[in-house]
Length: 275
Image 1 (cartoon, rainbow, N blue to C red):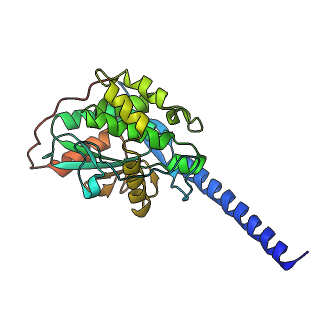
Image 2 (image 1 turned 90 degrees about the horizontal axis):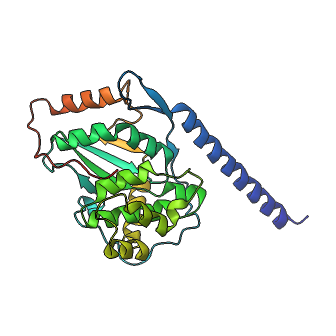
Image 3 (image 1 turned 60 degrees about the vertical axis):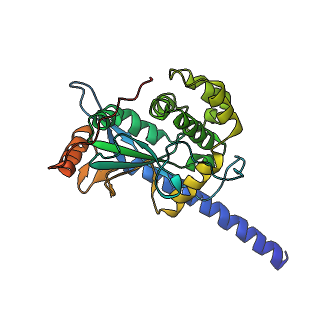
């Protein structure tokens, strides 16, 4: 066997080993990181697992977005990569990095949604949402990208909070790239009053904000974050814990109250609609 063939086989074997190690690392994160879910009444706290491992750099099967990065209406922050929800002058800010295909993101959102919305509405908290497309890169497909684009399209017409919640409440299994089908995203928009319009459909079908989503994902990759969801309260990580305390509904309320002590609440905004 020629030396060139031997080197080729060694390179292939090394790539296979690296891929297996990435899978093992991902599963270790799933087993070891937990987040406490919100509950009603006396049911107590239910554990939900893991943080999805960060993208290894692959783009999966999705087409690379082209053209200028068109930010949705009302986007703020560096390079207009932030979608804000809540009073601009709220004393505390929760920064969230999410992937719409990420199951742990859905667990986080579904567990803490009501509490976060209550604090938004009362002016205690502003939430700044950022998007990543890790699952597209890890598993292939385009659902992370297309769902984030659709959410940005909803932001254009002031329907982001409700549509964001609808996407997470109706998230398909991680391996099912249902969000890669624009018709599914448009179908779900019917759950938000007034969102399913020709303008919204065109925005979704045209991928109007695809390049913006890709730019957001690049910012995530360059940010040194461990995975999605990443949640920072006033710049300090709180997922899956803050210091020695795990994130729970009670602890989140406590942390915000401590951060806001002596400060006036911001101008309250209406609670998000839709279901």
